[in-house]
Structure formats: C-alpha cells, structure tokens
Length: 181
Image (cartoon, rainbow, N blue to C red; front, side, top):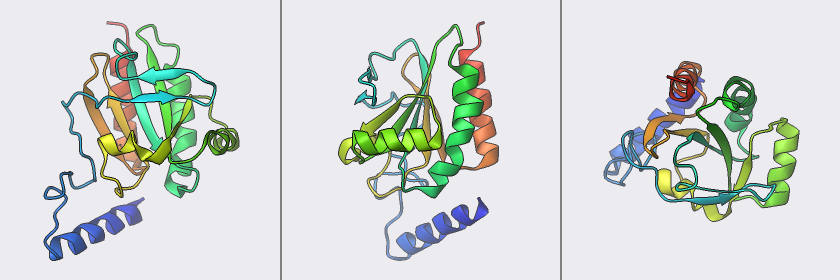
C-alpha cells in the first residue's frame, strides 16, 4: 500500500512544480472537495435492486459511501474487508447503518456483475458520469475512497486508497457511531 502513497506524492510534486496545488484546484491533498465537519453534499442513488437512497432519506442513519469501480484493483482489494469488517459487522445495529457501494460511471448490469464477482451483499449503486463522486472528490482524483457520514448528515471521516491503519480507524469510528449509548 505504500506504493500508492508514493504515486500520490509524485502526482502532488508534479502539480506543485507547474503551479497547481490541490488546494488551488479546490481540493485537499488527497483529492477531496469535502472535509470532515461538512454536511454531506446532496445526492440521490438507486441500487441495482431498485432501492433509492439520498442524503435526506439517510438522515438518522450512519452510513458510508464507498466509491469504487470494477476496473480498480485497489477497490477490489478493499471490498472483501468492507463486506466482512464493516457491512456484516454493523448492518444489524439498532442505531442503523448502511454501506453504499457507489460505482463510478458503470451501468447497472456491469455493477451487478461486479457485485456478484466480488461477493458483496451491501447495496451497490451505479453513479452515471460520476456525478455523486464529483460532489466529494475532484473529477480525476481516483476512486477507492470512503466517506463516513453520521446520523445528522455530517462527514466525520474520509479515507483514500486502502491503507490498513486508516481502514482500522474507520471501522472503530463506524463502531462508535452505531453503538447504542
């Protein structure tokens, strides 16, 4: 996973060398255009089974928007962990939890095949044109990112790529947010 950090750092160096910093482009160093503490941007998604989700329908529920794509090898590495360590563990919590796979610019049939191939049971939603993705990250910032949103609709954590330490922090955060108090 350190290789991905090196690649990201090299991209930052190249952009900076020509005068383009991520901040100058309206994004943080990891390509996010939202920050922890921001309200989650408005979105509407429909999963491959026809269930609809939006930022307003999910108020009162903790959720993770998992940005992914079938062609993304890092996404493929992360998805079994999301299924096992996040979805299976927290889906039945009394306080409510949803994990939404948001598949970047692939049609419903491709998303359905991808979900079956990856053996994930959490809802998978096509994101035509990457419109939802682009509300949280710069258009070419790359998938494999998670946006953790609390039950009030506030972004509480952002992850990028599949860093095991960051992933473990995300699991702890979701656990705390969904635990009965």
